[in-house]
Every structure is written in C-alpha cells, then in structure tokens.
Length: 482
Image (cartoon, rainbow, N blue to C red):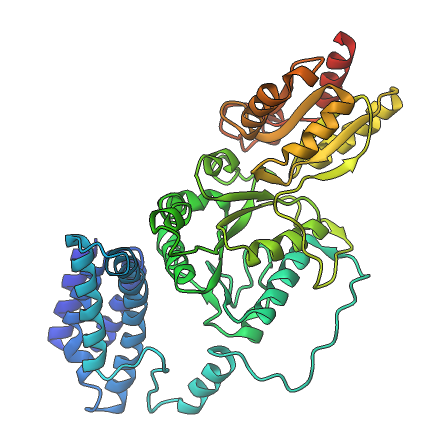
C-alpha cells in the first residue's frame, strides 16, 4: 500500500499536479507514522524538489509549507524516536552494532535534509499566507503562556471525581518539576480519552503535553529514551490493552535498562491508563493485564481504587526513579471523594486497610474493592466480621500488612478481576502459603475471573467476573469448615 501510494505521489509531482500531490501526501502521513525510517527517507527525498521550490510563488510556498509539516510528522516518529533508541542503545552504551549504525546514519540523513531545505524543527513553518494567525496559534499552544496572575489555591475540601484527582496530580507535578511531561494519543487538545489531561496543554504547551500518533511502541520507546536523558515522562495508553503493542519497550527497556547499564541510567517513567472490565466494551477493551506486567523484573505495579489514593499514588509514581505501571479501572473514573492537598503523597509499596475485622482476611484491589464491600454488608447482617485489605501495590506485595492480618484471622480469601490462571491471586496465594503456612487454619481461597474472553453481552460479561454473592458464599464456606 505504501509503495503504491508513493508511486502515485511521485507521478503527480512530476506532472506538476500539486493539489493532488498534497492530498496524497496527507494520506500517506498516517501510513508513515507507523512505518519505518527507510520509507520515511524515501518520501522525503522524493519531495525535495517541491520543498526547495518555495520561492516560485506564494501558492507554491503554502503547499510546500503544508507538505513540510506532513513530512515532519514522519521524521519525528519514524526517524527521531528510532534514532534516539539507536543512539541510546548503541553509541551511549558503547555497542557499535550494525543496526545502531544504520539507524544513526538515518538520523543524520534526516537532520541534513531538514537543514538543506531550511527547515528548523524547533520553529514554526511560516508561510506568507495567514502569517499572523499561525503565529498567534503557535504562541498560545506551542509553549506555555506566562501567567498574568497567581493561580487561585484549590479548595481541597470539595469532593472530586477520580479523573479530576488524577488530572490534579499531573498538573501539580508538572508545575513542581519542569522535567515532568505527558505523552499519548489525544492527551493534548482532546484532553485524554477519560478527560484526565483536560486543558493541560493550555498551561504547559504542546511540547510537555504531547499528542502522539497511534503507535504505542513508538511513543513508549520515545518515553524510555526521554527518561534516560533526565525527563520524567508519563505515558497514557488510551486503553491498557493497547499497551501490549509496547510490551517490548516496557519489558526489555523500562524494566532492564537500569540493570543492563550497570546503574548508569534510570528510567523514571509512569505508564498509566484505563483498563479492566467495563460495561459491554468487548473482549479486546476488557483486558486485565496486571499479571502480564507482574512477570517483568524491575517494574513496579500499582492499582488505584479511590480518588484520594489515585492522586497521592500518582504523585509518588511520578517522583519515583523506578518505572511504574499505573492501573486505573475504567469504571472508577466517576467515583467522587475528597482528596488530599498538593503535599499528600502515598507510599507505592503499602496496602490500605479498608475495614478492620477479626474473622477472615479478604485481600482485593481496584474495582473489586467495591464488590467486596458490597458483600461485606451482607456478611455483617449474617454475623461475620471480615477484615478487608486493598493491596494497591501488586508488585511488590505488602507482605508485612498481609501477615499482620492473617496472624489475627488465620484465614484468607483473595478477590480479583484478573484471570484465575496465572493471575495476581495465583502469585499472592503462593506467597502466603509458602511464607505464612503455619498461621493458616484454612487454605487460601481465590475468587478470580474465568479463563475466557470477556463477552459483549451484559449477562455473559457479568458471569465471567466475581460478583458479591460469590464472595459471601466463599466466606461462609471457609468459616463453616474451620
């Protein structure tokens, strides 16, 4: 498809059909954004005559200007991101492999081409037409505007939605540390798929609130390179399921670079976004990826469950020097509660005591916290006194808090939305049995989602995940047999 359209563009260019050339180039942009640097260099070389013809007429200059912007997107994604990786993993680490050499030469080609056409990527491309309009747009969006007056201090006594608390955390950390930035699909002018980054681009500019193409492996790799050079990037996945496309960058790069560089590099990156089973979102948009990322050495996992701990934990994750995968459940964004002020930061490694009790320990996290608390109402009516702990840290587990609870109750149930096979509950159950076996009066019981793709039909979707009635039955079964 790319080769065919390239031939079409070249044919139109040779015939002087500039309007059609421009149209096809815009269409090609979307193809090249997820393509390779070699294809990008092909299209750049093909359009060199057009780009150098900007002096012939104002109309031609406008066309060349628009084409430059299209090609810049190709350079930025297909060239710069991969070249950063090549330099970062090749020259900086001292490994002069053939691949890194090719990509480094490709980056030099991009730079020399841009210089030959007179294009400076750090400045706007200005055409004689609508000069003032474009300049004003760039002044208001490309960089953060100066504050004319001190911002008013927010009222932290007012309840906030979880998406607002997350936005507040990002806003405060970006203001506190100029090295913090966020990138992802639609995080800028659109405000994020769940409004977490609403209007942040107006305050911090498009360079720190960076809209990216639909290319998770590309911009996640770019974030790793940025973190290696001193920035603190936040990567937002439009859906956590999409980040499977960036699994190589998260596992081989985020988790291992600190070790493989002998401690020379840190990767302080936060990878966050919505996940979990929503309401009729279908199998691909209902992924529970906690156990996927749990197996990666060097990466911390955090699952938030309330507006308050979401804000405090996100601030801690941004400040951490470790890569953190930050799970936000898609159904919890509209929870409303009071949050802490800008100084409240919560430990990433500690569990949260939701309800104290003496009969049985229920360990849970994320959305299942509310499923469990609904079951607790029925259990209290039946005379049971369960203790509920929100794990929050999925890697590492807060084994101190878990042990302290089991020493009191001697029984434990794990309730999760993750899959039964190889899920978070499987790892935690193994840890409890191996470490605290002598404290248990009953084997640890796991309540997990079934090992099937999540159905779209509402009734079938509900049947695949844990419901409050199942929690009540499990508690009665464990308490009755002990």
